Image (cartoon, rainbow, N blue to C red; front, side, top):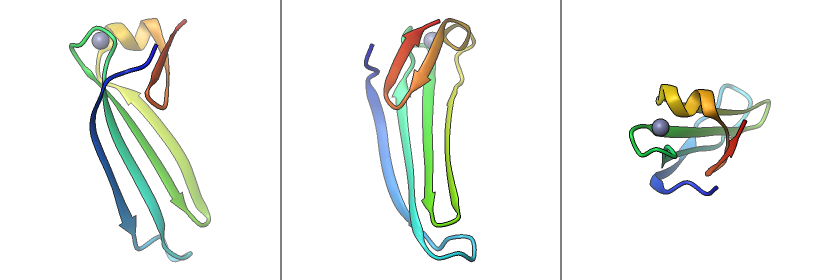
Length: 73
Ligand SMILES: [Zn+2]
């Protein structure tokens, strides 16, 4: 399913000594609507990482999250 996006903020980062890049932060509503799903992507040379977390315990146990999506486990 697709999650409802609540916030979208992309900002420029000065990087971590390996050049500058983009940091993407997006916040989605969790499937039950009681929590939030946070998507963060650091797109900085030499420091690429993606982090998805959900602060809703129920949905955390029930779903696997992607960028703006949730899949039942
Ligand atoms: Zn939830």
